Image (cartoon, rainbow, N blue to C red; front, side, top):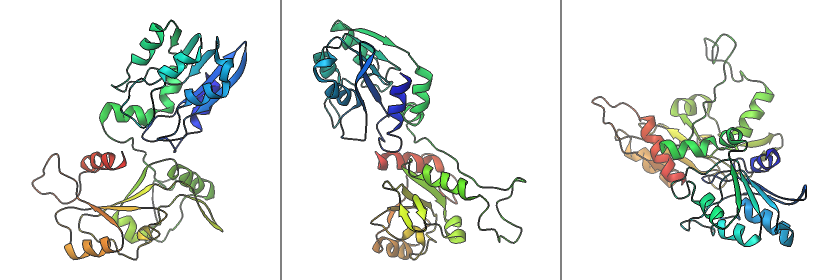
Length: 293
Protein backbone atom coordinates (compact mmCIF):
# COMPACT_ATOMS: atom_id res chain seq x y z
CA UNK A 1 0.00 0.00 0.00
CA UNK A 2 2.92 2.33 0.62
CA UNK A 3 3.92 2.00 -3.03
CA UNK A 4 0.32 2.57 -4.14
CA UNK A 5 0.27 5.79 -2.12
CA UNK A 6 3.50 6.90 -3.77
CA UNK A 7 1.91 6.27 -7.14
CA UNK A 8 -1.16 8.27 -6.13
CA UNK A 9 1.04 11.21 -5.11
CA UNK A 10 2.24 11.51 -8.72
CA UNK A 11 -1.14 13.05 -9.46
CA UNK A 12 -0.55 15.93 -7.04
CA UNK A 13 -1.79 19.14 -8.60
CA UNK A 14 -3.30 17.33 -11.59
CA UNK A 15 -6.45 15.54 -10.41
CA UNK A 16 -8.57 18.31 -8.84
CA UNK A 17 -11.48 18.21 -8.20
CA UNK A 18 -10.96 14.44 -8.19
CA UNK A 19 -8.93 12.73 -5.44
CA UNK A 20 -5.47 11.30 -6.00
CA UNK A 21 -5.58 7.51 -6.32
CA UNK A 22 -2.94 4.84 -6.89
CA UNK A 23 -3.42 1.13 -7.54
CA UNK A 24 -1.32 -2.04 -7.78
CA UNK A 25 -2.15 -5.56 -8.94
CA UNK A 26 -0.06 -8.15 -7.10
CA UNK A 27 0.13 -11.85 -7.95
CA UNK A 28 2.36 -14.44 -6.30
CA UNK A 29 4.27 -11.66 -4.55
CA UNK A 30 5.01 -9.76 -7.76
CA UNK A 31 3.55 -6.51 -9.08
CA UNK A 32 1.92 -7.22 -12.44
CA UNK A 33 0.06 -3.96 -12.90
CA UNK A 34 0.21 -0.40 -11.61
CA UNK A 35 -1.47 2.91 -12.26
CA UNK A 36 -2.48 6.26 -10.85
CA UNK A 37 -5.17 8.80 -11.72
CA UNK A 38 -3.76 11.50 -14.01
CA UNK A 39 -6.67 13.95 -14.01
CA UNK A 40 -10.39 14.57 -14.63
CA UNK A 41 -11.75 12.57 -17.53
CA UNK A 42 -8.72 10.25 -17.51
CA UNK A 43 -8.89 6.53 -16.62
CA UNK A 44 -8.91 5.77 -12.92
CA UNK A 45 -5.98 4.12 -11.19
CA UNK A 46 -7.66 0.71 -10.89
CA UNK A 47 -8.44 0.60 -14.60
CA UNK A 48 -4.87 1.45 -15.58
CA UNK A 49 -3.44 -1.16 -13.21
CA UNK A 50 -5.84 -3.87 -14.37
CA UNK A 51 -5.26 -3.07 -18.04
CA UNK A 52 -1.52 -3.43 -17.51
CA UNK A 53 -1.99 -6.71 -15.67
CA UNK A 54 -4.27 -8.15 -18.34
CA UNK A 55 -4.99 -11.87 -17.87
CA UNK A 56 -2.56 -11.97 -14.95
CA UNK A 57 -5.15 -10.12 -12.85
CA UNK A 58 -7.17 -13.32 -12.43
CA UNK A 59 -6.64 -14.60 -8.90
CA UNK A 60 -4.48 -11.60 -7.97
CA UNK A 61 -4.88 -8.97 -5.26
CA UNK A 62 -5.73 -5.37 -6.09
CA UNK A 63 -4.32 -2.69 -3.78
CA UNK A 64 -6.00 0.71 -4.14
CA UNK A 65 -5.65 3.85 -2.04
CA UNK A 66 -9.34 4.84 -2.27
CA UNK A 67 -12.54 2.82 -2.52
CA UNK A 68 -13.37 2.00 -6.17
CA UNK A 69 -16.21 4.14 -7.52
CA UNK A 70 -19.61 2.74 -8.43
CA UNK A 71 -21.63 5.77 -9.55
CA UNK A 72 -22.49 6.91 -13.07
CA UNK A 73 -22.77 10.70 -12.71
CA UNK A 74 -19.20 11.49 -13.81
CA UNK A 75 -16.93 11.67 -16.86
CA UNK A 76 -15.62 8.11 -16.70
CA UNK A 77 -17.40 4.75 -16.22
CA UNK A 78 -17.54 3.27 -12.69
CA UNK A 79 -14.58 1.10 -11.70
CA UNK A 80 -16.38 -1.60 -9.71
CA UNK A 81 -17.74 -3.57 -12.73
CA UNK A 82 -14.26 -3.66 -14.29
CA UNK A 83 -12.70 -4.85 -11.03
CA UNK A 84 -15.27 -7.63 -10.78
CA UNK A 85 -14.78 -8.73 -14.40
CA UNK A 86 -10.99 -8.77 -14.01
CA UNK A 87 -11.12 -11.87 -11.81
CA UNK A 88 -9.06 -10.52 -8.91
CA UNK A 89 -9.76 -12.54 -5.78
CA UNK A 90 -9.08 -9.86 -3.18
CA UNK A 91 -9.09 -6.09 -2.90
CA UNK A 92 -7.20 -4.09 -0.26
CA UNK A 93 -8.47 -0.53 0.19
CA UNK A 94 -6.66 2.17 2.16
CA UNK A 95 -9.82 4.16 2.88
CA UNK A 96 -13.47 4.23 1.89
CA UNK A 97 -14.62 7.22 -0.14
CA UNK A 98 -16.76 9.62 1.94
CA UNK A 99 -18.31 11.02 -1.23
CA UNK A 100 -22.08 10.50 -0.75
CA UNK A 101 -22.28 8.87 -4.19
CA UNK A 102 -19.84 6.15 -3.07
CA UNK A 103 -19.55 5.92 0.72
CA UNK A 104 -19.10 2.17 1.10
CA UNK A 105 -21.20 1.15 -1.90
CA UNK A 106 -18.13 0.19 -3.91
CA UNK A 107 -16.82 -2.08 -1.15
CA UNK A 108 -20.28 -3.61 -0.68
CA UNK A 109 -20.59 -4.39 -4.39
CA UNK A 110 -17.19 -6.10 -4.46
CA UNK A 111 -18.12 -8.24 -1.47
CA UNK A 112 -21.42 -9.21 -3.04
CA UNK A 113 -19.41 -10.41 -6.03
CA UNK A 114 -17.54 -12.81 -3.72
CA UNK A 115 -14.31 -10.88 -3.32
CA UNK A 116 -12.39 -10.58 -0.08
CA UNK A 117 -12.19 -6.87 0.71
CA UNK A 118 -9.95 -5.39 3.40
CA UNK A 119 -10.23 -1.71 4.30
CA UNK A 120 -8.30 0.69 6.50
CA UNK A 121 -4.75 -0.28 5.49
CA UNK A 122 -2.65 2.92 5.75
CA UNK A 123 -5.86 4.88 6.13
CA UNK A 124 -4.25 7.87 7.88
CA UNK A 125 -1.63 8.23 5.15
CA UNK A 126 -4.32 8.03 2.47
CA UNK A 127 -6.43 10.66 4.24
CA UNK A 128 -3.45 12.98 4.57
CA UNK A 129 -2.70 12.66 0.86
CA UNK A 130 -6.26 13.67 -0.06
CA UNK A 131 -6.85 16.18 2.73
CA UNK A 132 -7.99 18.85 0.25
CA UNK A 133 -10.57 16.49 -1.28
CA UNK A 134 -11.82 15.41 2.16
CA UNK A 135 -12.03 19.03 3.33
CA UNK A 136 -14.18 19.91 0.33
CA UNK A 137 -16.57 17.01 1.02
CA UNK A 138 -16.84 17.96 4.69
CA UNK A 139 -17.17 21.74 4.45
CA UNK A 140 -18.15 22.55 0.87
CA UNK A 141 -15.21 24.95 0.65
CA UNK A 142 -11.74 24.78 -0.91
CA UNK A 143 -8.77 23.70 1.19
CA UNK A 144 -6.72 26.83 1.94
CA UNK A 145 -2.94 27.03 2.39
CA UNK A 146 -1.50 30.21 3.90
CA UNK A 147 1.84 31.22 2.40
CA UNK A 148 3.75 34.02 4.12
CA UNK A 149 7.34 35.25 3.98
CA UNK A 150 8.78 37.04 6.99
CA UNK A 151 12.00 37.72 8.85
CA UNK A 152 12.97 35.96 12.06
CA UNK A 153 11.55 38.86 14.06
CA UNK A 154 8.19 38.64 12.30
CA UNK A 155 8.57 41.49 9.80
CA UNK A 156 7.57 41.43 6.13
CA UNK A 157 9.63 44.47 5.05
CA UNK A 158 11.90 47.20 6.41
CA UNK A 159 10.34 50.22 8.10
CA UNK A 160 10.61 52.02 4.75
CA UNK A 161 9.13 49.11 2.84
CA UNK A 162 12.39 48.66 0.93
CA UNK A 163 12.80 44.89 1.10
CA UNK A 164 11.94 43.04 -2.04
CA UNK A 165 13.04 39.55 -1.10
CA UNK A 166 12.86 38.18 2.42
CA UNK A 167 12.89 34.51 1.48
CA UNK A 168 15.85 32.89 -0.25
CA UNK A 169 16.02 31.04 -3.59
CA UNK A 170 15.06 27.67 -2.09
CA UNK A 171 11.96 29.08 -0.39
CA UNK A 172 10.90 30.88 -3.58
CA UNK A 173 11.37 27.70 -5.59
CA UNK A 174 9.20 25.87 -3.09
CA UNK A 175 6.54 28.57 -3.41
CA UNK A 176 6.42 28.06 -7.18
CA UNK A 177 6.19 24.30 -6.70
CA UNK A 178 3.23 24.88 -4.40
CA UNK A 179 1.57 27.19 -6.93
CA UNK A 180 1.79 24.50 -9.59
CA UNK A 181 -0.09 22.10 -7.30
CA UNK A 182 -3.06 24.29 -6.36
CA UNK A 183 -6.13 25.47 -8.27
CA UNK A 184 -5.90 29.16 -7.36
CA UNK A 185 -3.63 31.75 -5.74
CA UNK A 186 -5.32 34.62 -3.88
CA UNK A 187 -3.83 38.02 -3.01
CA UNK A 188 -5.25 41.39 -2.02
CA UNK A 189 -5.09 44.41 -4.28
CA UNK A 190 -2.56 45.95 -1.88
CA UNK A 191 -0.08 43.25 -2.84
CA UNK A 192 -0.73 43.92 -6.53
CA UNK A 193 -0.12 47.66 -6.11
CA UNK A 194 2.92 47.24 -3.86
CA UNK A 195 4.74 44.26 -5.36
CA UNK A 196 3.23 43.91 -8.86
CA UNK A 197 3.52 40.08 -8.81
CA UNK A 198 2.80 37.84 -11.79
CA UNK A 199 1.46 35.00 -9.58
CA UNK A 200 2.41 32.40 -12.17
CA UNK A 201 4.03 29.08 -11.32
CA UNK A 202 7.53 29.17 -12.76
CA UNK A 203 10.10 26.41 -13.09
CA UNK A 204 12.84 29.01 -13.57
CA UNK A 205 13.20 32.75 -14.17
CA UNK A 206 16.37 32.71 -16.28
CA UNK A 207 15.45 31.49 -18.77
CA UNK A 208 11.74 31.94 -18.05
CA UNK A 209 9.99 28.57 -17.95
CA UNK A 210 6.39 28.35 -16.81
CA UNK A 211 4.99 25.23 -15.20
CA UNK A 212 2.62 23.28 -17.43
CA UNK A 213 -0.26 23.80 -15.02
CA UNK A 214 -1.04 27.34 -13.90
CA UNK A 215 -3.32 28.32 -11.01
CA UNK A 216 -6.17 30.78 -11.39
CA UNK A 217 -4.84 34.16 -10.22
CA UNK A 218 -7.38 35.77 -7.88
CA UNK A 219 -7.22 39.38 -6.67
CA UNK A 220 -9.48 40.66 -3.88
CA UNK A 221 -10.18 44.21 -5.03
CA UNK A 222 -13.29 45.85 -3.55
CA UNK A 223 -13.18 49.03 -5.65
CA UNK A 224 -11.21 47.80 -8.68
CA UNK A 225 -7.87 49.51 -8.18
CA UNK A 226 -5.96 46.85 -10.13
CA UNK A 227 -4.25 48.51 -13.13
CA UNK A 228 -4.85 46.93 -16.51
CA UNK A 229 -1.06 46.94 -17.00
CA UNK A 230 -0.38 45.03 -13.77
CA UNK A 231 1.63 41.84 -14.27
CA UNK A 232 -1.17 39.77 -12.80
CA UNK A 233 -3.31 40.86 -15.76
CA UNK A 234 -0.74 39.86 -18.38
CA UNK A 235 -0.46 36.60 -20.34
CA UNK A 236 -4.10 35.59 -20.04
CA UNK A 237 -3.45 32.89 -22.62
CA UNK A 238 -1.11 31.19 -20.14
CA UNK A 239 -2.71 31.96 -16.76
CA UNK A 240 -6.20 33.30 -16.18
CA UNK A 241 -7.02 36.11 -13.72
CA UNK A 242 -10.17 36.69 -11.67
CA UNK A 243 -10.78 39.95 -9.81
CA UNK A 244 -13.27 39.78 -6.94
CA UNK A 245 -15.07 43.07 -6.30
CA UNK A 246 -18.01 44.50 -4.35
CA UNK A 247 -20.91 46.83 -5.13
CA UNK A 248 -18.49 49.70 -4.44
CA UNK A 249 -16.47 48.87 -7.55
CA UNK A 250 -15.88 51.49 -10.22
CA UNK A 251 -17.96 50.53 -13.25
CA UNK A 252 -15.60 52.17 -15.73
CA UNK A 253 -12.51 50.44 -14.30
CA UNK A 254 -14.36 47.14 -14.20
CA UNK A 255 -15.27 47.43 -17.86
CA UNK A 256 -11.70 48.37 -18.72
CA UNK A 257 -10.37 45.19 -17.13
CA UNK A 258 -13.03 43.09 -18.82
CA UNK A 259 -11.99 44.51 -22.19
CA UNK A 260 -8.46 43.38 -21.35
CA UNK A 261 -9.74 39.82 -20.93
CA UNK A 262 -9.92 39.79 -17.13
CA UNK A 263 -12.80 37.95 -15.46
CA UNK A 264 -14.73 39.83 -12.77
CA UNK A 265 -16.80 38.45 -9.91
CA UNK A 266 -18.96 39.90 -7.17
CA UNK A 267 -19.82 37.06 -4.78
CA UNK A 268 -23.17 36.95 -3.03
CA UNK A 269 -22.85 37.91 0.62
CA UNK A 270 -24.02 35.08 2.85
CA UNK A 271 -23.97 37.33 5.94
CA UNK A 272 -24.60 40.98 5.05
CA UNK A 273 -22.70 43.53 7.14
CA UNK A 274 -24.01 46.96 8.13
CA UNK A 275 -20.76 48.63 7.18
CA UNK A 276 -19.46 46.39 4.48
CA UNK A 277 -16.05 47.67 3.35
CA UNK A 278 -14.57 44.70 1.54
CA UNK A 279 -15.12 41.11 0.53
CA UNK A 280 -15.98 38.36 3.00
CA UNK A 281 -13.43 35.62 2.48
CA UNK A 282 -15.98 32.89 3.25
CA UNK A 283 -18.20 34.19 0.43
CA UNK A 284 -15.21 34.39 -1.90
CA UNK A 285 -14.18 30.80 -1.18
CA UNK A 286 -17.70 29.46 -1.69
CA UNK A 287 -18.01 31.23 -5.03
CA UNK A 288 -14.51 30.23 -6.07
CA UNK A 289 -15.23 26.56 -5.40
CA UNK A 290 -18.19 26.61 -7.77
CA UNK A 291 -16.07 28.27 -10.46
CA UNK A 292 -13.24 25.74 -10.09
CA UNK A 293 -15.58 22.74 -10.18
